[in-house]
Image (tube, rainbow, N blue to C red; front, top):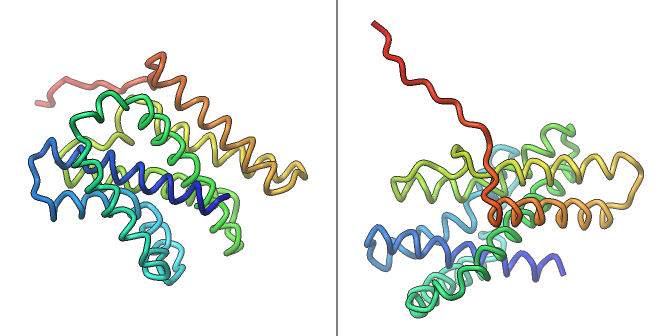
Length: 204
C-alpha cells in the first residue's frame, strides 16, 4: 500500500510541477527536469544529508519514468487541469504527508534521534517543492505564510510522538498522515495562514 501511495504522490507532484514549468514557458526538457526535481528532490536531499545510498531513483529507475510520464500527461491534459484543481490539491496534500512519513521512517531505520527523524520527514515532504520554486524563480512555498511546512512538521511530530507512546508504527503512520492531511486540506479550504514577519524600515 505504501508503494502505491508513493507512486501516486510522485505522479501528482510531477504533474503539478509540470504546470509550474509551463507557466514559465519552459521547453519539454525543462518541464521534465522540473517534474523529476520536484517529485524526487526531497528524498534526494534527505539521503545526501543522512548519507543513505543509493538514491531511490537510482535503485528504482522506473520512478524517473513515472515522473516524466506524469509531466507529459499534465501537458496533454493541461486544458482540463483547472477543472481537476480540487483533485490535484488533494493529491498534493496526500503527497506531502506520505513523503513526510517515508522520510521519518527512513531516519528511524538509520537510528537517528527524534529531532532528526522529524526533520528528515519535513525535508522529504517539502524539499522537492523548494527546489521547484527556486528553479521557477518563485519564493518557495515553504517560506511563505501558507500552512504547508507546518502540516509536514505536525505529521512528523505526531508520528514520532504516537510511536513513543507505545503504538505500532502502522498506527502512528495512519493517525499522523490523516491528521496532517486534514490540516493541510482545511488550510487550503479556509485559507489558514501562519503569522508573517514584516520589517520595512531602512537602516541609515
